[in-house]
Image (cartoon, rainbow, N blue to C red; front, side):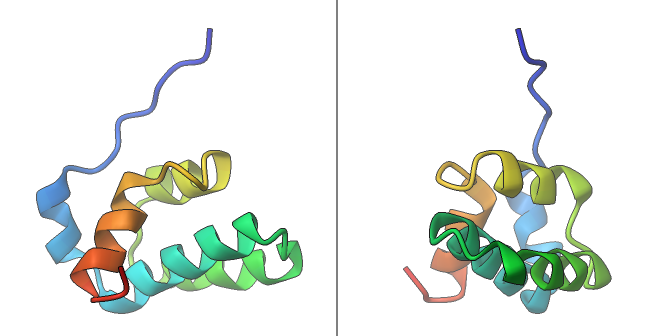
Length: 79
């Protein structure tokens, strides 16, 4: 059985830089479209602007189920 990693609390969403949130969204979309060559740049940008490693890992391992990325889309008006 795989250990479940805790994700950042929803209220921490407001604390993340908008560029980090956007990078997570772009990462999620690139994974969905199997555009793997772009993923490294999105991960680097997300890290640079303070995205938690657990959230980056969550987007990579479960790109269709990333709760924070979906909330980020909503918060940025991209839903």
